[in-house]
Image (tube, rainbow, N blue to C red; front, side):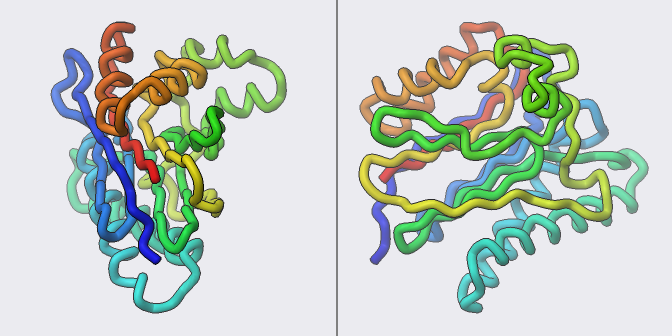
Length: 241
């Protein structure tokens, strides 16, 4: 039985940015949602993020009818996108070393599959609680895990954007993928780090809980991030049952 979804989304170019390095996909019919954050410190981050979104959506759309497990399809789509970014970068010097993060949610048959590479995040909002479903592939996340930094220190650390894994950087990439049930009052938030750099999890939860619908939630999150003076690109996709 097809799950009825309510969706909101919003993307904003950072102040003083030439391009919005983020890209996203919202496909309610397919149940596929993607956020990618091009690496601004590298050439053509906006190109890398768009290649990732296009390639991943193409592969998933083509393979859904094959009967394969969604986890296998997701992992294949991400590794294919990684290769496509590397191949594109090899053709043009100005695209050399471009890269991107990516986070994906695929909703089907009462299940949601989440996969990611980098520090764009997926959150589960259910029963009045918020849970981060993805673990940042970053140096700061490793420091948090070791207890060398507090969450508050990590959010403002000068190396918080240093990634340990991203698409388009190495020949091989190892996406992390999880599956969970999709039932009850459930929402999934996908976001680039432009949001989580300035809002903590409790603020995100309170804004979403206070919103009339997913689009109003995205609008309110974006407005709060802007008021914090964030200069980074911000992209949000909020999917609710």
